[in-house]
Length: 315
Image (cartoon, rainbow, N blue to C red; front, side, top):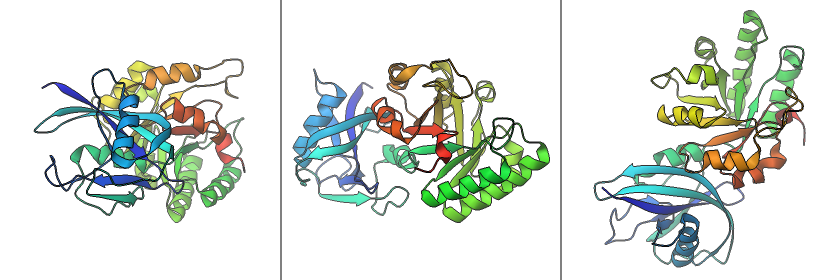
């Protein structure tokens, strides 16, 4: 079956809500909710098609559209490749010109149905926050267990919602206690925590998932049995393996110079964008980054940024 290229818009308000439209009577999948967008016509790029479709469907002019995920889905009537863009700025008043209805929805709390089946992974990705914070309590460069827990609690109070517990330099007893306390803090604030590289610890402490180092990722032939699984990636082969295993997200780095590797410049945003072009999973960019780098990350196709030291700074 020939692949049909489609541009799809995740239109985002400042409060994080995104827009869905209901397909009108007489159309394929009439009554189903979808992200606005449409077929890429001959001679168009997906971005060109997005701009045209949003003007035709909603009467708006796109101001900012960042590339995001590219996913394929086979319907009974078509094999589609969906190029998703996140649209944060537009001009004009949103008008319902082609859909049967429009609805703003919150990530993780969609209350319209039915939805086009291709959109389930997109809704899961939208529930991921912009920042993925990584702990660093142990070792000579660490800040200490009590200081890290205090920083975690403060960051959770400020809105942090995704945490990786990465503590290879704590001894086993310290790591277990730290994990239990960190999970309890995250539960209290509605945040999710993944344990790096230790599936048994993740199960013992009741973590939400497992984060795989690249060395553990590459030999796998199936996804680990956790609700949330992520992986650290450094090149195209590792990214491809994460996608093959259908993980929930990946981390790509290092983008810039880091405190742990001074003098090493990282791959930069241009190489990051090239690696993420056409990629199906949400990816956090890592390496000397802070929330100030979110616009550059979005522009390069990343979902957000991952950070060790900067994640715990009060801003």
